[in-house]
Image (cartoon, rainbow, N blue to C red; front, side, top):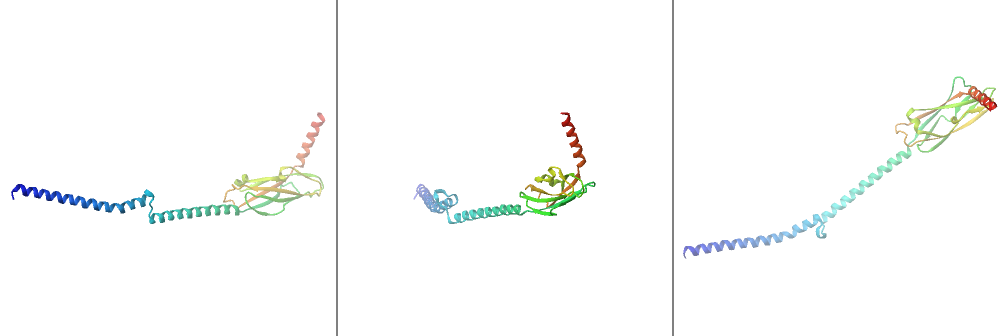
Length: 215
């Protein structure tokens, strides 16, 4: 056999081996494509395929979200309940100005209330003198920053109180503490000081009488 024939046989053998390698490689790749495709579909959901692991993870995520929502709802419920159960102690004080001889006192010393609810109590006054007198009650609230959250719907302090000698009077008070009352305010004091305004009322009556006569 000459050199040309040997070269031709060698080339043919190399080409044949390469073709066989390519065929085997394509077969192996095609075989591997099936599990790779299944994995791809399981992860992405392509072609409607989902693996059991993916379903479990989805269930775990849904359960976690449900638990978080339940915990969040429980927290909101607890906060709402805490607000609903919040109570504030209101102390009532009754004082007389130096020149006021009346007997003046609160019907009850303290009252436990809930913000947002209507509350009612009374004060009592008695004219201990032998003459008719007129009084005016001036309120004050401590701590001072709580004053804007106390709303009186009925109060004897809105008008003057005139009592004859020995006469006594029960004076109602109705109020609401606003829900916005600062959380750190656990107790507040509502104090009234009673002033004798008899002379002022008398002078005002005389002035009004003179004006009426002139007209």
